[in-house]
Image (cartoon, rainbow, N blue to C red):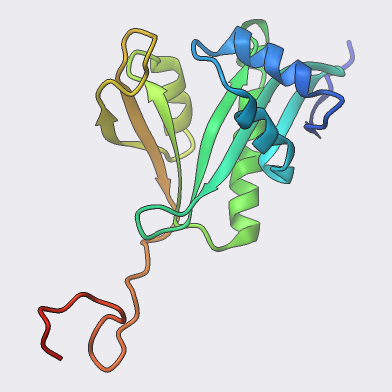
Length: 176
């Protein structure tokens, strides 16, 4: 018996409809046109997963510059149910981990997971992610509406540099 071929490929205008179809099957929420427009410009941050040349999964990320840090946000990472537990999800996470390692300038990786999705929570914990927050009413049209924020910390965010003993552009009480 020959081994299955599992590989990642680019998202292009020619296969974006496959990504849209996959996301409607895998995720309980829908994504708008802007999401897919951004994905087309994401380069290495958006990949389709192939199992013997059939699209069975995808990962889509973006760079997040909030909270005084540079973080990678996993917007979606999913695989069709019959193809789970074959290493496809792990390959996608490993691609993301390799990307942030090669870049060398990320503080953390994070994502949202529906609170009752124990399979996904356990999956990410294997890669060193941990629940750092629970956001109530995160999802609009699905139950449960709450989401855990899972995060893998790569390094502690760097504080703003001090200049002459003060933080530049810091608000003062009017006295210098």
